[in-house]
Every structure is written in C-alpha cells, then in structure tokens.
Amino acid sequence: MIVIMTSDCNPTYKGVDDILELLTKSKSLHILLVMDRKNKPVRFSELKKSVDSSSTTISRRLKELESYGLVARTLVGGVGNMYEYSITKDAKSLSPILQSLFDWVDKRSKE
Image (cartoon, rainbow, N blue to C red; front, side, top):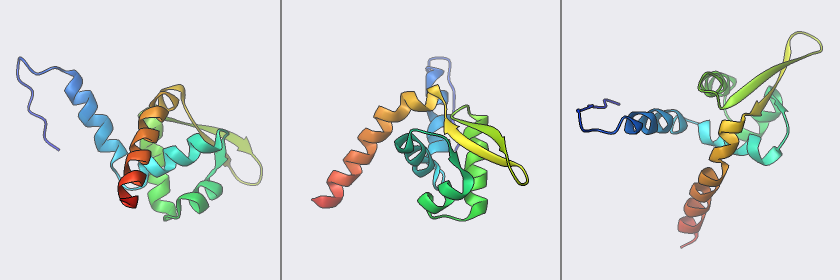
C-alpha cells in the first residue's frame, strides 16, 4: 500500500493505514477476536484449532501482532518452550471497534 503524504495531510492517516494493513492480513482479526473472547491467555495449539488455519499463517500473524504491540507472548515452560499469547491493553481498546465490525458483517450476511 502506497501512502502519499502531503504537507496538509494529517499524519494520523498513516497510522490508520498501518493498522488497517495489519488487521486486513489473513486471520489477524480472527486471532484478535478469539483471544478477546476467551479473555485469558491461550496456547498456540488452542489458537490454531479456534482459527482453523495453517501453523505458518498463525505464527506469522502472532509475530506481526506482537511487534505492533497488540499481542503479548509469555513463556510458560513445560516440555520444550511453551508460550501463551494474550491481547494487550491496546488490543483490548480495539475490542468495541472489532465487535462492531463483526456485528455489521453478521447483520449484512443475514439480509
């Protein structure tokens, strides 16, 4: 996505473009919605089952969401390195917006 910034263009638009670019990638919104609704940390395998996507896609999205500050990864130990993932305060603040989007799509699909 190419964003052309002019002297009278509000810099917030670039931030909006950036977050939309991340959230519109395959499974990003789905991952955030699942984590938000569970309201507790989730393991990769649980997330994979809920999102129904490849390990590669989920792994990539988690890394991208983590680098953007929307997902936190915590080492919980166990056999090998086991991690749990949870949404951050920033991601939680997006919840009403994401829920509105979900509701809008759901309503339109029933019309």
